[in-house]
Image (tube, rainbow, N blue to C red; front, side, top):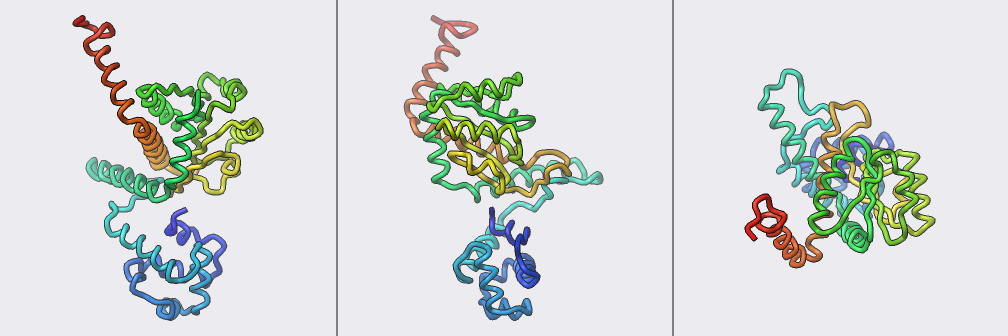
Length: 290
C-alpha cells in the first residue's frame, strides 16, 4: 500500500499519531524541510510520537520516513487534478468537465498503480506465463472484458489463453489444470469463496496461480505463487462505475504482455511480419496476390 494511503487510512494509529498524520497530509510540501522537533512542536505532540508514527508506516526512523513523504510531495506537484474515483463527475458538470475528469482519473490511476508495482514480482510472473503450456484466466463481470483484451494480445505471440469462467465451466477448467499450466485470477475485492477453493487446490497440486487484486488484506494472497496488489481509492459498491479498478487491471495486463513480448522481441517481431504477410498479401488475404 502506498504511504499516502496509509496516512489517510490511519489504521491502528493512536489519536496523537492521527493528528501527526493529518498535519503531514495537509502540509506535504513543507515536510521535506522539517525535522522531528519541529513536526512534534507543530502538532503539539512529542519526539517519540513522531518516531512511532514513522515506524508504524514501515520505516526505521524519521529520516527515511521524511524521504518517502518528500517523494509524495514531489509527485503531487506534477500529477493531474485529483478526482474522486467513486463519483468522478457531478450532474452540473459540462461535457468538457466530465471528459477532463475521466482523463485525469485514468492518468492518476495508472500513476498510482505504477508506483505500487514490484519489479521482481513482475519478472517472476512473466516467467510463469512464459513457461506455461496453457494459461487459464479466471475473471467475472467487467474484469472478464479486460481478460478478453489480454487474450487477444497473447494470440499475437502464440500464447493461447483460456477464459476459465466462460459458459459457467470454471470448476471443470480448474480441475483440468496441471503443474505445467498457469492460472491468473483477476478480482479487485478478492473475496470470492469459489476462487479460494480453486487456489487451495492449485497450491496442493503445485499449479502456479497469479493474483491481480486491489485488496491488500485478501486471504487469497498467501495462496498465490505471485500476487500483484495495487490499492485504489475505489469503494466496493458506492460508486458510479468500476473506472479506476478496470483501468488498473488493463494497465497491468498490458504491462505483462509487453514484458512477455520483450523476452523474445526479435522472434516475436519476425513471426508477426510473416503472419501479417500471409494475411495481407498471401493465401489468407481477401485479395491474394500469389
